[in-house]
Image (tube, rainbow, N blue to C red; front, side, top):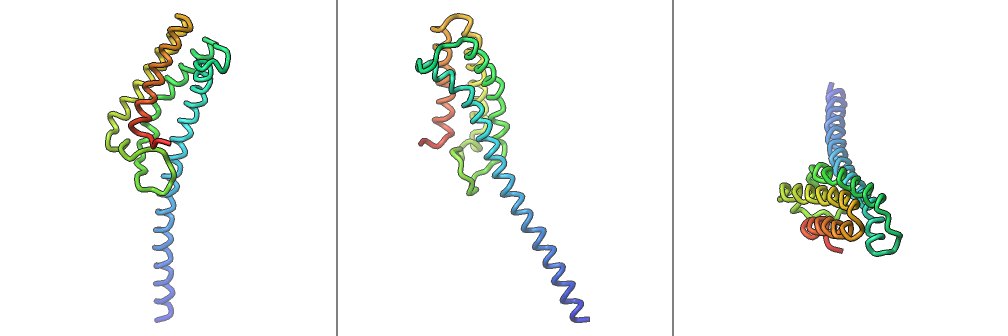
Length: 156
């Protein structure tokens, strides 16, 4: 009887600890996935931004159609930025450049992402008005990106 109680108690303790360990692992996995998702989205934005920057710096030939297409993609992606930052990952050990104040100022963070989207749409439209208008609109979009980075991203 005593031995059976010990065995049952051991089984119950093992089951309880097994339930606790996966809960911790699931939380860590969720944080890791949240950060990877954010970084992935921002890398895609960077993928579309890179050629526009290259054209602005005259490192690659100017192509209004490519700028328009890329700016339209950025306008589609920017509203997703606040969505992928919904998971508050403060205090985790997962490396990230996101500053904690994103979650303290989520409305401002979302407004900045909306501004980036609007400026990207403006950039796409500006391509119909020539290179000068396009580069001016690109400067406005770049300024909107910088405003968010200045406030919510660790400086390198």
